[in-house]
Length: 587
Image 1: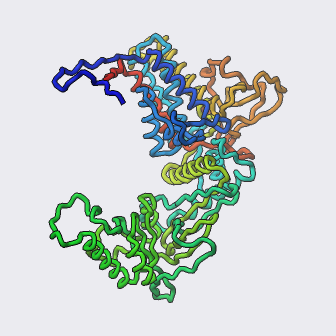
Image 2 (image 1 turned 30 degrees about the vertical axis):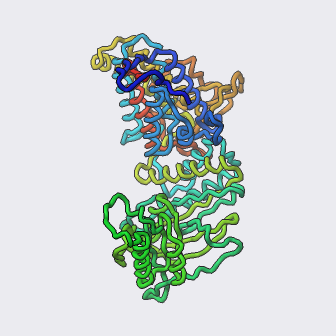
């Protein structure tokens, strides 16, 4: 390698840093924003396009249409795109859903706003007002035509929510039968993971997802307890584990569990940055190993049956413990520690000098099980613990990774329903309805908005059109199909999709995209041709009974992640639009 500093010395003065000042109108930034908008909009919905991501060196191929896996597989250098994707990752960290929606809102608002000759400060003020109107309308305590209250006792409604999430990702390729099996399995898993009483404190989400490649999806199942992989146990047949047990007062037995998060490798380097002095004749590794052996003796005296170590266990210690009927499982990692705490009630042990019996956990039984030729250990909890293991199968690696992410999203969404039991009518219907409502409200409050922001009527009209066009475009792209006509009606403001250029019977009755409303085709209009839907007053007088009594599965979106995505998308767009110059130090 040749050095670029040839001919220079340390005494030479440092050259000034060349600085580039870029604006949002710069071609490089605009092209990056347009490309990112095309990627995220074409990934949404059951008809979304699957993306293949690979680095320039020809590394691992990632196939996905989920926002979480897509953003994790990609790296960004453009500052504006990086700002938007960072905001999306923050949203996904909390909700694990609606990442594409958040980015689509932000990117569409930015790109359409740049085409206007309007002050960006006024635009951002107007967008915040529009956002407030939308949020108030959705979260109205009385009633909202696009929001329903979710009843946990209504299994059909719960199943609709799960199916709506599952069918949104085409890579999993759910057939009708597999879709029902998977949705029922996820509902069963969620119900099994709920605590039996209010006093139960949990560290994890109580559902350990185990992904196995080699069997079809319909072989997936759920087990009561925690499944840990144990490669050291032979897998040619089920083994009877010789584990110490303790008898209960009712003549049943349980196994004591010790959870160690420190290393038991016996290496003096594990002491850390602590300073100590030792004689040259003293073997520090031997002394540390002696301390660990004393700790093992304390485990034996306490009648511990299972030692679970987050890191490595010295072979000598493993042999010593196995001779005392203590099963050792090592290299569990950080992610499994919360599940072990919940299934057993054990407190992590970080020091080997003392062993308090109160830090030991309990499990009802320890069993050896074999899945696809690999050994696992199933820890069955006591009756007051609710930890389950969801075993997912797939015959393709990338499909399995997508399925695991999708099921984790479903389970998280179901848990969030406990805190916010509300859903929106999905498949683009709530966005279309919201756009129509916003048009009407802006027109009704035009004088007040102009007074608050100091904008002109033309500016207000343009900003409102940008905001509503964004909502309608997101609704239309919800299936990923571009060869469709998108229509709505005056009564409900829902979305209908028809094959492009088709001329069906005007008296024919069709369901809307979410499946909650039926309407004659003669009462439908093209979204692009009828912008003055805002003049209708029937929009807020929709009867709930007509919306929620459909004799088919209704597509539902969870309210909390969608409202959060809409809010985060608008605020992120306002942040980007507020940026004057991007200063890049090229040095």
